[in-house]
Length: 485
Image (tube, rainbow, N blue to C red):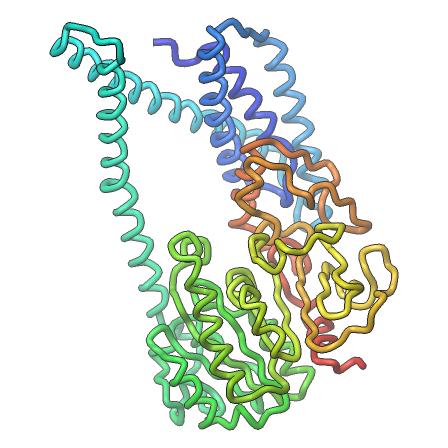
């Protein structure tokens, strides 16, 4: 059994070169390992298929490919330092890249062994079928039957032994986290907060992220949150109780999959308005955003529409929307409702959000839409008044003011499924002062995998980079609320 055939090994080497190429964020050791393992395994599988289709005639000198891999590793070390400087993060140690590459190769070897086990099972089943049916028909029945049996066995095993157990464990853990009551969070005593003694909603019913939402902040501001069991009617009743309708500014926050709301989205308007604001949100799930999106991408959109419609039916002025990540996707996907509000701030909005996919202006990372009349894309506060070239917008910013804040280094904002097969238009952008390396190169399949691997640490970057939106939300909200006019 030849585990590493020449063609497949070349494919794995090409996968290594892609895995070590730069992406949007500096990698930790485990990310390098995951990148290398995934890209090597994919390269191996593709090259093995191509080599078999052309009769195994393709050969490549292993010495040359090994030398190229060594150069790619050295270049990766320097690129990781460059990317770290761009996003103001500590530079990764040399050993992180080197050891990560070794661990990734070990993971790739395990993938190859699993593949060989599947092939051996296929051969064994095919042999049994051939002995049972010695007469060979024109149609390769033994091979097709063996393939079907092998695939079915692995699919059933994967579904019941891995997927079902894993999904059950993820759901159970998410529910436990949602029920967890952080002892460092004090139950609010102000009647202006949900979960207080005067509230129609109990402290326990708010969920973990809801309890965070109503804790802290300006004493004079209203904060209303409905847990996963709450209805829109409960939210409206709580707004009636707290006098939320009487505030000059009413901000509807669409949460992420876990029910989380970026605290900077809540605190910034409270600071800017001296607490003359009511912030409202509710939970529609307790699963992580990627899982929520894959499981049911319509839930965030429907939940946002139900809450927005109910509030806009009661009030038509001074209403604003906020959302980050999946929350931004849910809110911005209801673009017909955006016309009924005074403004909105969306941070780290996923690329697949309909209102973004319809934008054809360039550059695709920071497009200028209708001269900046209503919609503005922002990477830094400077882009609130000037475009990516530093030139003033052609149009005055009129109501509704819709602001999409997205850092060029944010993988959540720039990932989309077509990137696995088509080069993204935003990768051709070269923005002055952007926190994205100009050395990005698109690889089929591999680049999409790299961005997925970037995501888990994207929210742990320094504020103003990656998927971390902090201080810049103060000037953004000031502009959207019209306080700087």
